[in-house]
Amino acid sequence: MSEIPATGPDPAPAATEPAAAELGPPGDSAGPRRSRAWLTTGVLIQAVTQGSSAVVTILAIFLALVVGGVLIVFSDPVVTRAWSSLFVDPGYTFGQTWDSVSFAYSQMFEGAILNPSTVSAAIHGGSIAAIFYPLSSTCAQATPLILTGLSVAVAFRCGLFNIGAAGQWVGGAVVATWLGFGVSLPPFIHVVVCVAGGFVGGAVIGWFVGLLKAKTGAHEVIVTIMLNYVMYDLLSYLLSHPAMLQQPGQTNEIAPFVDNDANLAHVGGPPPQVGIGFLIAVAAAIACAWLLTRTTTGFQFRTVGASPSAARTAGINVERSWTLVMLLAGGLAGLSAAAIVLGTNTQLTYNSYGTYGSDGITVALLGRAKPIGVIWAGLLFGALHVGGTYVEAATLGNVPADIVQVLEGLIVLFVAAPALIRAVFRLRSTSGTGMEAVAKGWNG
Picture 1 (tube, rainbow, N blue to C red):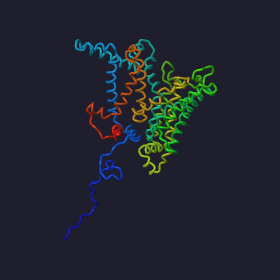
Picture 2: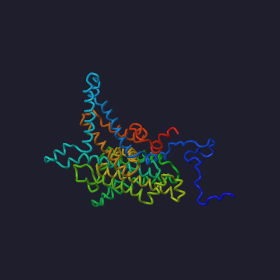
Picture 3: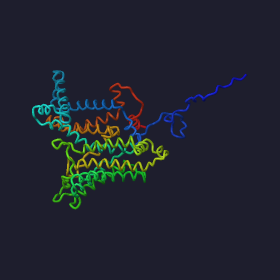
Picture 4: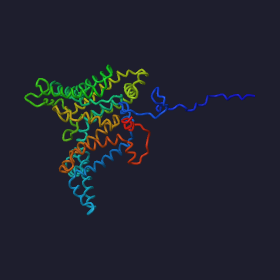
């Protein structure tokens, strides 16, 4: 008698086919092989948005401070002379080394976060506002960095690499400045119109980039880089003609002062340097976080960033998402300009754009392209900028303020290499996602 097979669901088939990620390209007769991560915009964006954990980031900052301490030692002539007597008096050598590094970092902390002497003075009848001056200066420095960082981060989420925050910053600065001195409005309305004008000025530049990407397929990296130079030259032209933006009676490239009615007020008034612009930056970050995580548009942005082809299959208008996200990115960079020309520096010059565009890229990378992470990254870099100037003055130039730029570069370098951090601190390794994908991409 033949055995009757049992009924019920079929057993799961054995996993005999290799994973799609391990297959070679179509037509590859060599069979299964390990995938090769090519360095593309998508790989870089995945590395930023799916990078290492917060623990690795904190350890990367710590390691950067350690390396920075070594550089401080080599830049201090007193310590370098002490090292010549290492074998004669090692205690003196290490003591001088510790004193130099600890003094530099303590001065950096006091200049950017809190100076204990101001607390003591306030207890004995001194100014209470002086206690908050370092934090106020840090927040003021962080304001444009947060906004330009958001400009880059939001574009990252939609799969675009916005290198043009500097050009978009110029667009926002031109409109905000012209509205600031060329239009007469009631006080509160005037400043609101100027801030909105800064957003619109940057948004138009970003929208143009997104439109070119959507209509012609032009790569946003090339377009934004070229537009930066166009906007630099446009700013120079506008500031060179009195009929445009140049201040009357001036031969330098400088615009008139923004009217007092259009100035962004300081929180608590000066002496604190931080103004309403910082609150605008924080509000913009919260709004971006809500947009990306709680709205349909944000979901579409993230879907397009993950896979444009899959987004098209799901019925998402990819070209529309590209245009909208670049419009938003440009507007955020324009807000950064408005915070500067209406707040901390009420007179636009040719050099006003500074390094906000490039620093925004660094802040977005450190913040993992997440709005809240961008706030913390902007505050960190703002503290470094303020503390670097303070430590140079405190050490009489023995430790130059340029050490801050070195620290910023080291932090980003170590954050971008989590495998190195895990090796140094003996952390458990993870799969090859995040920044490891970028490292693999260089060599194929």
